[in-house]
Image (cartoon, rainbow, N blue to C red; front, side, top):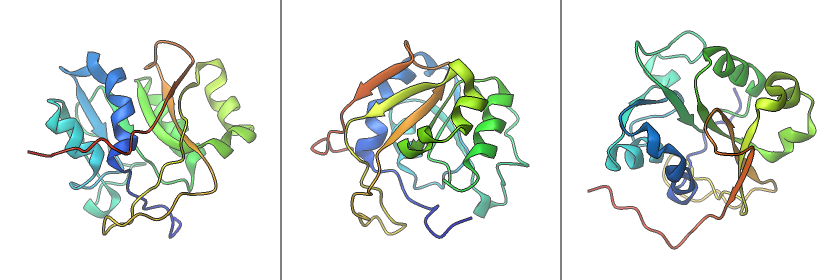
Length: 170
């Protein structure tokens, strides 16, 4: 893995996904690349979702670990080995939403592995990711989207990041 693979997704990048997860309120969401302090884990639990999170640092390597029961994957995976990650997710045959760089769309890989099943929740703004201490890393030189499977109502949905929204984990 790369030193840059552990970037924390900020609140404003999790919020646009919530509207597409409404039908999963009574399902189990697996966040396979997330520690307990992940904004995916905190926000989804706060919104009433059942969430299972796992992380390689907890001895739960994504390539060898799968919870006994889950219905959808939501996470920000490492950008390293992205093809293998997406291939494994597609083999599950279940819906997912994973953040990935838009630059990957210039590669053949997403088109080869998804075919016409690729759905994008495109974000108009670049995600200003956080480091493990919660500090902003600065806006990257690339945009990111949620690469989705069996989740969105159409192949491409576009949303803005709202930096003014605050999330309180009460």
